[in-house]
Length: 456
Ligand code: HEC
Ligand code: HEC
Ligand code: HEC
Ligand code: HEC
Image (tube, rainbow, N blue to C red):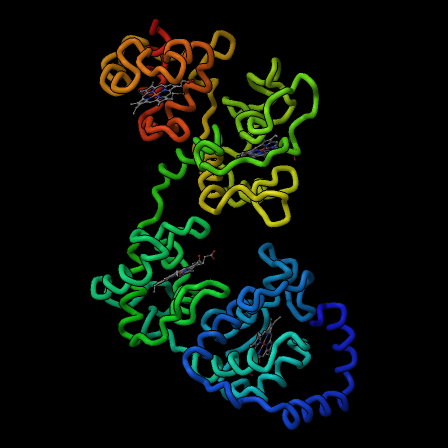
């Protein structure tokens, strides 16, 4: 297989017109395409998956530098691997991408294996010796017979599916739900299906018809246009993950993600954890967000500025109200190493990343408003909500807060570490059934905290 360096060399050679003509002759005359690979639905669908992402479908390594003809390598979302996907330059609606100066692809020019082989070697493409005859034949089958017109499925200029959302629920429940779950949220490595299809209807339709590259998801080309259109409409009604549910799960991950996820942490200390003797925390503890950034989210500017938990690391307060995508990038970076094939152990999935990012940007609070930093006293009214404690909390903890034998007594816990208690009251306890009260007004929560501090 040739990769960018060689491709550049090839590219120079191609600049001389004579070589180009010889190449054209070679590909049209001497290579025998088309026999044995009929343009059946399977071939068309595979071509669609190659168009989507050929290296995932071929289980191959993508080139690591930008496609030499990719324009705008400095776009914020530009990425070398992506620049080699057909769809990046030709679009999910097959009508071209203005940022790549392409027009629509059509069977007229790339619909036979020979004509497509010629195009894929040209100056715009430089795909030399990457595809086998079968790949080219499948891609050509897709371009010739697999491109669809979107208007019957999706409203022009929007992402709204045109189908009837109630007619094909059974198709979803019997085929898709096996993997995606009845609510579309079972595969944790992608966004909830409903959210994804509402935002990316054309891309979703392409994947429904052709399957997902490198995955077992079945291509649905055998269905009638109307059925697919109805199926698409139904998937657009699937639920989004509730934002508060996401924030509070993020809070529990921040607290103790190995408990919350059941995934075991790496068996070495977190690379950003200071390697000093007085930091004798176990390797598990060193991977908890709270260990470096604090229960008050202030890191070295808060309660952890001294004592056994001091690491000197800054807090996460600057990201309150920030962009969740930036937080996700931070969790994947070399400093954190929570997600990415390049790290020794990638421990999060996409749902974990989203939930943590939502917590960091929308779920954290300035604890100084609710707890006196010097004395640790909750700044609430300890008399007002005894009743709420007795109804809600006492159900598990008992009226005196001592009923649970596994943890420490609520009174002691809330006096010793009110920041941790406040975090748990708002977000719940990792891997426990304790309710998260994030939805309640902070005035109520701080009153409960104040009452809990009076328990024996
Ligand atoms: C880095 C960008 C880029 C990538 C990646 C890319 N193309 Fe192209 N492609 C172009 C440009 C530029 C043209 C010429 C402008 C045009 O015709 O729209 C073109 C033209 C074509 C045409 C001829 C269109 C016509 O009808 O005139 C076909 C067919 C085609 N590409 C197929 C593919 C396939 C299949 C892949 C993936 C294996 C692919 N391209 C990947 C940029 C790209
Ligand atoms: C055999 C299991 C399986 C079945 C059945 C299945 N899918 Fe998928 N689907 C997957 C997998 C796996 C992915 C990709 C996950 C990834 O990218 O990591 C996926 C991805 C998708 C995507 C793209 C989502 C994204 O964020 O990239 C869509 C849309 C989709 N499926 C819709 C459907 C629909 C609609 C059906 C029913 C017609 C269906 N799937 C049936 C396994 C399946
Ligand atoms: C072993 C220590 C450690 C752990 C555990 C840790 N971080 Fe960090 N984090 C750091 C360090 C060090 C920085 C500062 C990096 C820098 O200055 O560039 C940082 C920076 C951040 C920032 C950016 C703060 C800013 O203002 O720039 C965020 C957000 C963040 N971490 C979130 C998290 C989350 C969420 C987790 C848990 C999944 C986590 N961190 C776990 C050490 C850690
Ligand atoms: C459904 C049962 C349930 C309810 C209701 C409940 N909790 Fe909990 N709570 C738990 C469990 C289980 C633990 C974990 C105990 C352990 O660590 O073993 C816990 C832990 C705690 C802790 C941390 C103690 C520690 O170990 O540091 C605090 C503080 C706390 N709860 C306060 C409250 C308050 C205040 C309420 C009412 C707003 C409440 N809980 C409601 C089950 C519950």
